[in-house]
Image (cartoon, rainbow, N blue to C red; front, side, top):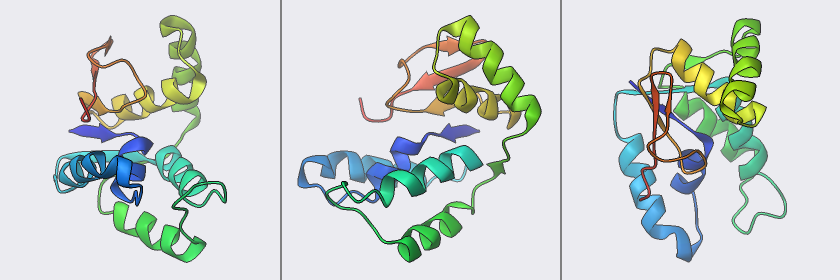
Length: 135
C-alpha cells in the first residue's frame, strides 16, 4: 500500500495553469487502488483547498464532497498511539510533528511508501520510504 500526502490531493484539484502537469500526475496516482490516507491528510486538504487566499480555492460543500470521495481509500484515524510515535519520530528524524505524523499514520496502515512532494524523496524512515510522484 502507498500512503498519499496532502499535496497529492491538492494538485489533483488545482486549476492553476502552472500546475497542470502535476494535476495530471496527481489524478493518475489517485486512480490507483493501493492507496491509503489519514484523517490528518483530509483535514489539511480541507484547510488548504478552502483557504480564501488560494488562487483556485473551492467552497465548503465542494471540499466536503471531495473528502467523501477520497474516503474510498482506507483512512487512518489519528490515535494517541500515532501521536506518541510521531512525537518520537519527530525527534529521531528531525521532522516537523505534522510530517512525522504522516510517516507514523502510514506505518500504522502497513504502507511501505509515502507519496509526497514535501518529504525527502528516497528517504527511508525505518521501513517507510518516501517517493515524490512529481519528479
